[in-house]
Image 1 (cartoon, one colour):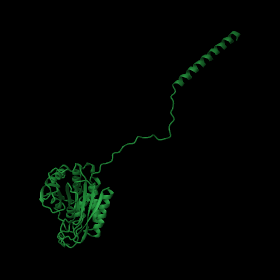
Image 2 (image 1 turned 60 degrees about the vertical axis):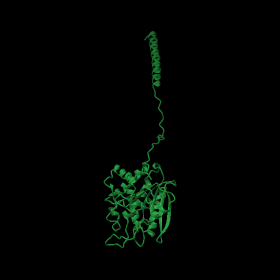
Image 3 (image 1 turned 180 degrees about the vertical axis):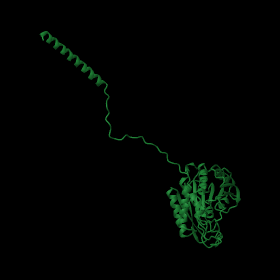
Image 4 (image 1 turned 90 degrees about the vertical axis):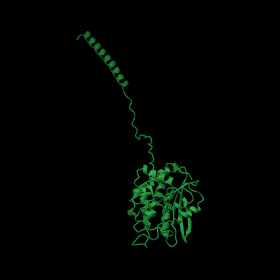
Length: 326
């Protein structure tokens, strides 16, 4: 090969190398411009925004009320002045304390027996609404043909009303009321015509000695019967009765709250009505086991307890305003 050819070959190789180097610079620069930055992955879990879960609004439960019936029945008959009466008293007060009610015990002596009315208050304002029930049971089952000398167990006549009040204490929305609410558990209601006793001794003492006058009084008694038929009482305030029975009808309970009068009751509402206070007795007096040893828990229905409790709850939470004149 001649010198000229060698020189030409070297020139060609030089130009080729220069062009390759230029291309390489351009290629790597283009790739660098298109690279995406990679963010390092954190080892910490992401922080989530808090989720607000609404608090369920409590509603009257027949099952919860039935549990209160069972607890009372496990104590035995709760005759005024007995150890069993004191035991159920402690159960009632303990339950109310757990629901943060202000409680008082009103002590009185009747026929030589120390009796206790139990009072739960939402506040100390004037003109409270009073809802009451008796917690004592009858000393003798004098309507029982086979065992008239035995005490009445009192599942319906005693325990059912207490159960409704205790469950109401748990669920009622006090902020919806236009006034304070008192729940009163009367002693010495059920021994009338035994050894010189009168009926409704506890509520009579309470009404005679009260320093604050309730705006209205609602009594629940014998309302747990599985075959529930609650008629309007002739001795109850008619305006208040219509308000409650109308609520029952709206809730679909018309076949159990029968909007017609049937009985004229002497009950714990009587001493308040005598003072001119609007008072109503919610009672199912069509109960074949009244004042017998057969007044037992198998005759009670949680559905019946719930119906009465829901009517009272609805009445109170709609304002609980008495629409009649006084």
